[in-house]
Image (cartoon, rainbow, N blue to C red; front, side, top):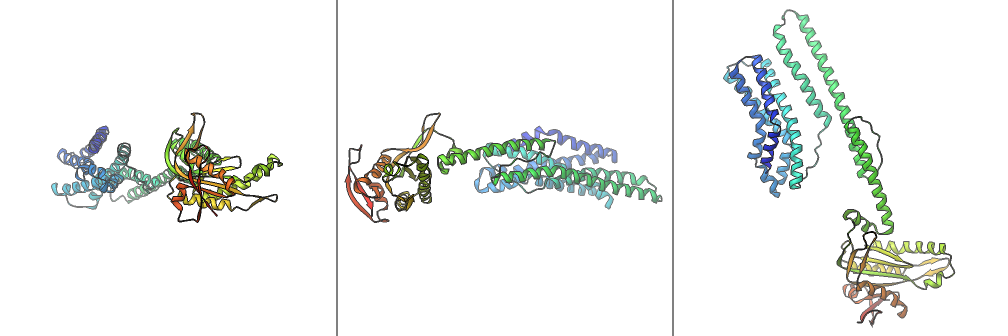
Length: 471
């Protein structure tokens, strides 16, 4: 499939394969007038352009892409396809130069070597590199869409590529003109040669400076945009100034829009985390809201403030809110420290879940440990000590987003939740601080010193359960 795709891509850009050999043909006829010699040139040069396609068949790139054990080799070939193709072209042109000297019995000279290298090696290699570089973009896109193969970025400087390309493109014709003109200049006329060298050197310096400034002007906004993306990845959603009037300026404009959207999303997530836990907020943001639940074995913890009604009977509402906020801060920190999540606040009560939405193999232990620490909180408000009662139970429940299409709530539903709530209320009857259900006890009986309360028929249930406490 990949080889077929390569053929399709070559067919799409077939004009390039015809234009460059045609240029070589015209240059050969103008410089020598020998059709046979020029035909040999075309054959070798054209072979150089097509040799990169042979890489796919010789190296069997499809096998590397489909075989996970050799996928890294396939990635290496695709990532460096431009360089490999340019080197292949350079090799074919060197073979041509050697054949050129052998077939036509031409004496070796530095001038001729430089001219042939300039015509057939340097220009062709550069052209091959950038053509295949453009082609490899389509190839990488194809591999990503069809095979899901990703390629890491290469640390190749954009401005260096531009400098090399434009310097050679400008310098190569000058070199060819110099060698064409020099035989017709009278050697004795040293002043002409001197002027030619001075003008040529000045022109080369000017071309290099022009290319350098132009490449830097292209690279600067690219680098600026790259650094701005790093800023985004670090969590700084700031706008950037639009410093370019071309496509880069349009990219910066859309970057600012993206940054603003990400900032709004981050603010939404932060705000959402104040109403639900950060863990649930992360799941909703990444996976979206799905109106369905999944069965999951969890441990549910309920807390309640002892004598809450009596304590708040003569308090102002604002005072009650301040007291609860301080109290809940202590409770929430303990639950989160033990890998639980606070699902909801119900008046003075707290409902927490362990082992949802993320796995916790020791959820029963962490829930009981949280209950012990919460029951031992020494929180006083205006001289009043707040004591907490805790009920804990483990069972399979329904976990997920429950509600309508316009309003949902992440929660747990099931008999196990009701049992945990009833156990918390049962503390009043036995004057205890913590009551634990049978399932939780079986999971952590060796970790804590439990005392059996006996069997209890909880409100709303038809069968009794064993209840345990921790003194």
